[in-house]
Image 1 (cartoon, each protein chain N blue to C red):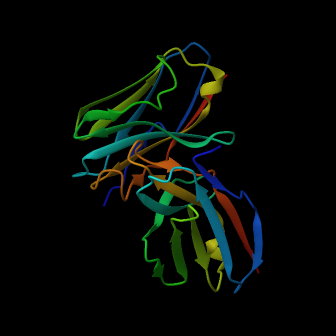
Image 2: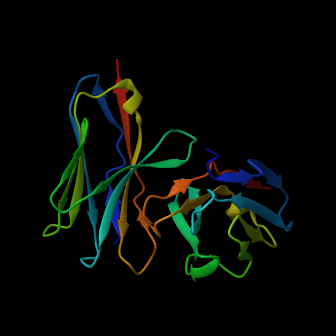
Length: 109
Length: 113
């Protein structure tokens, strides 16, 4: 079983839609969680950290469910510029960071 | 402000040749990471330095790969000899806070024929 698993998508949504991605992790000792964004043929960029109590940054909301070992990312009012691959990232302490394979989002006009 | 700088941006080489990838981290950052990304395996951590010292090299595929960080502003990843399966995008990232808030360079696209 992979340490971090994501639905590869693609998720095709119209502008203005709300879309959510989930990511599951296998190591219950995982300490920290992040979402990174990667545009096509570009480098990954940190989107947001995920805190135990959940956190919001503008149109983006991240949630952590330790009991079920998953994290989620919700994007409200999708923009064309949100089209990218979203990488779920987990820090277990044993390795620096483990990246999921990513979920591709395509926002359509 | 300059971000993480990587060179070359593209490298095409023949199997068996030595390849050296270079990275200049963001000034003041004390952690540096080398990653490899392929369609099949996604983004994989190869090695992680903290204050120029290798902390975790368990992701280095085999002895053909080696990485050095002689000072706080420069690191190299060397592959000798290169093989076609080494073809990938190699990213360098740096951070001020250990594994958190990593800033990635633009990557080096390596093709081994």
